Image 1 (spheres, rainbow, N blue to C red):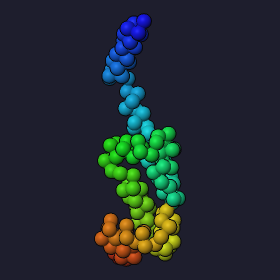
Image 2 (tube, rainbow, N blue to C red; image 1 turned 120 degrees about the vertical axis):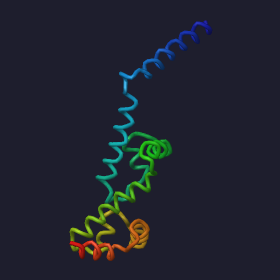
Image 3 (cartoon, rainbow, N blue to C red; image 1 turned 180 degrees about the vertical axis):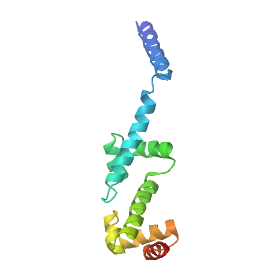
Length: 140
């Protein structure tokens, strides 16, 4: 009986493997794309909050470790780098389109410590937020 059961299981697995490999069934590819879209959307919608990799992983129903690997493979960058990029892009927009102080902007884009925000901004753009504001507002 064990031999028959293993042969039967092998046949089922073989058929499933063949189905997944068929080009007409893009279920797994679509799911990967949908998951990344859902994760990025969540990150963009919540950049101003203190969200973590765990929060995003939970949102897309993955474990944090698996999500971290999955995200890096799908986007080419790690979670922290992408989250920083999202926050700094919003900070740049606020610097140029508002009269908010750097401190106010820091908290509005999800940073709890001004020092951390200033370090990330300067590392990314080779200038402080105030220098960025002055440089680009002078150009216009």
